[in-house]
Picture 1 (cartoon, each protein chain N blue to C red):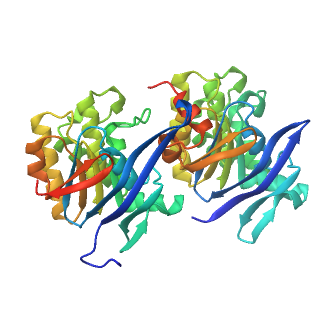
Picture 2 (cartoon, rainbow over the protein chains, first blue to last red):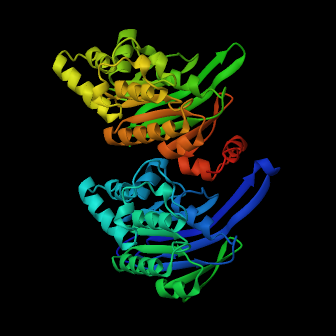
Picture 3 (cartoon, rainbow over the protein chains, first blue to last red):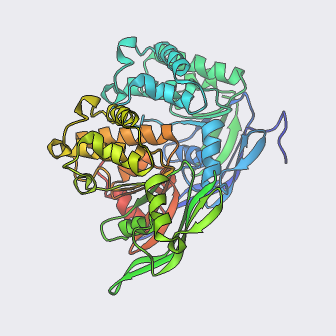
Length: 241
Length: 255
């Protein structure tokens, strides 16, 4: 199937991933067993399932962080579908640079860089000039309730919740065609959580496809168009949120 | 992504040890490649071979410019030297040995400019001053002798003296090993910023997976002179396949 205006943003199917732990005597862990996921532009899909069901593994496979053993991970990029599972490293980096965003649960600290430049940096990487990127970064940080007094400080010194908000600001400053969110609101207070819900809704309205791992039922009902359940590495059920 | 440097089936033996065992790799323009592995894995030998400082017993290193690929082993020595000091740069672990400690900081930077044909004293001095600011030594230290500099300052001076000619490829051999942790972070951040801004490709040898994580687009893992695993840095570090890579990753203390 080729992609056009009404095609998928994500079209992943038949994903298998086995970890072989050589330091544990070759112990094999099957974290994905035939998982599939399709998401349209403008749609927000919530991944649910018990701990260890493979939600984060599926997300990492979609991002090309985990290399799947079989299956295809087709991501819309420049109007065509690129299979992350077989693409060259350079092609994966290009997809990640322009089409596919990912917010992990924890901010990876970059030594010395201010919160403002951490956030602005992701817009600069996508071609915005530094001055404009800093203005946008400041506005996005304010929106996520990081006071301007903290903007010049490296986020290494921030609390867990503040770091997560910097992490979110870094992604939401860009318009991602596809965005993956791993527990985006896990350590946030209710006001920040509301703000993230609004950012997600705005991104979907602009046509972003979003996949989010969200445990909280009420939150899921607010943001998701659809819920996909994972159990033992397989997507077994789709339902309304 | 266009190809800049390519190694094909490099082999090298020291007495009866395989220092390089059939190593092939590629480096693209503007790309940062990390070579990781523990001491004795062959990573520094590989770097020196790629940089034309130590020939392989067999195999080829091909450098591509506008005229096409050149086998560096087949280049005449003059031409290789000119390439090494104009289009390439080499940042050594030991800055003290790489710099001239009895020549001023500005002189160390200016020397490389003069090797590349710069003659105007005022311009050379101004460029050196700008680079001293760039690497956070400060232009006011331009006439100081590096013999009085700290280890971190020496490394920053070496970085300035290497990048001043705007190379397209730099080789870095454990650039932060042996420095205080606080100094390491500053230098890594400096390298990261400059390499991205100047669009230079880099090959960095390190035993520190954190350095690879911070700087490198791609990572190759070496053991016993051979590449045992390679991929995007986050793939290799988060989803290591080879037993040796799993051992390296599991040996890192959580931060």
